[in-house]
Amino acid sequence: MTFFKSQISQNFLKSRSHSFLLLGNILVSFGILLVTVGGSWDITNHLLNKPETFFSPPHALIYFGVALSLIGAICSFIGWKNLQQFKIHYFFPLKIKLFGIALLVGAGPFDFLWHSNFGLDGFLSPPHLALIVGMFLCSIGGMIGISRYLEINNFKNSFRSYLLILAILPVWLSGSGIISSLSLPFSNTDYFNFNPEPILAFLIATMAFPFLISMSMLLIFRLSHYGFGMMSILGCLFLLIYSFTAIVPNFAIFDSVLFYSLNLIPFVVSDVILLHKSKKSLIFVGGLLGSVFYMVYYPYVMYTFNEVLLGKLVSPSLIYFVYFELIQTVLMITVIPAIIMGVFAVVISEKLSKKILMS
Amino acid sequence: MKRLLLFSIIGFSIVIYFILTVLLLPVHYLSNEQLVPQPYFEVILSDSEISLGESFRLDVVSENIGDYGDIHIVSTAFPDLIELDSVEIVTYDFTQSPVYIQLGDEIISGYSGGLESTLSEYPSIEAMNRPIHPGTKYHFELVITPEKPGSFTTYVKSIDIPHINSLSHYPDSGVLDHQNEYVSVYSVNVNP
Image (cartoon, rainbow over the protein chains, first blue to last red):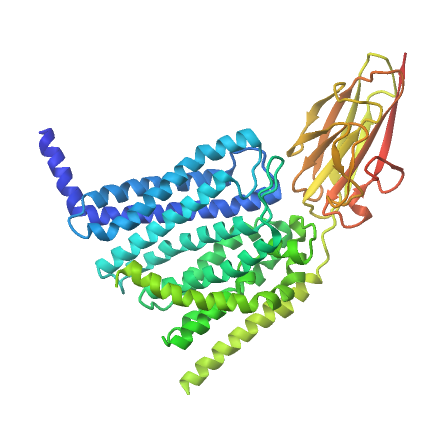
């Protein structure tokens, strides 16, 4: 009887393995999305309230996201193990996810130990770096897994293709986390000063943020086989997440939500321009998306540029005064490299999307 | 024709976006008045005269009577002490844990928010709240046991951050302390 039952469950797993694998990928991506939202909320919480304990609501969201991702990684592994075909196609994303989840799960106790021994840690610390890299790897694994599932099952034009938004948003947000941790001066604590060198931070922000925006947008465009509206929805969700985690909680800059919401314009415009799928259009969109990085990464990107250009002390309620004081200078200095990096992402996104879709 | 119209709309949208975000809205936001938090406190001393070996209570109720602020600090300093062994906090409802500053510690001075610093000449305790909403009151109470006869002095001051002008600290005149910042002076006579 027991043998019979296990035979049934084995058969069930085999028949449903592909769906199980997709569920795993969705859970991983959604889990990482929660981690990134919690991370962004945590930065704001540290800036505004300076919590003195490890146990805070943003940390709870982060570790709930880690738990979901862990369940997702396990589902992915079980689904992959029982796959009858395409096993090789899903091996690479599974490998990345498992490596990422190992880093994520290890980062939790490491972070707790770090807090216990060195008190409040900054944005960049060894446990946080492990956490952010783990997030990024998991989100990449989830993105490749979901994209290949849609491609293999020919869901290009179905409603399921919107899963690509869930696949790419965590990659964009966790990539932003890596760049922010390497460029924001939020890592000077009583025990360690991990603040990046200001000029290096300036260069990292100027090169990497435009590349990441353009890359994320063009990836969804290519992976969805030029689906109209995908870029606008992705951009809108990104802006919503940053609004609710970085702007709305800060009473003093709440009225700048209007300014921030204008960033939807370049995303929608890019979508419309790419109705005409020429190389020129792609290059124009890449450059446009790269050029708006200082506005899209409002408000915290200001801290990086302030270090070099003004050197002012900026408490949270002064953020937008310094941000807007700097906006024209920053754009004058960064617009050309930002456009170049945005265009560079056009080339890379083409190669990367071909690899992801194995075409 | 249709294509020309589409390109015109696209071009117009991009131009409007950059004009608004880079030229017009920054001017609008920069013209907004900065929020000026304004600290205020009241101190109640339990005794004006005690005998050596006895304790007295120093009760501080502080509030922000100005705009929203990022940080609210109340500092109590003891120029007659070398260590804080004889000071005990008995009531405390600030959001951040109290900071104990020992003699010789590096401390921020001149309301500079970190740009200027000096070395502490006597111990002090800082109570801190982040952020500080208008009209909110916080309270802490100390029990102090002077170690020597004579006049025992306590300095009390409060600073709100961002420190915009003289309204951002209280008191705004009088005695200057080791941080070159104004303090209110409270004394208790300790009889031998």
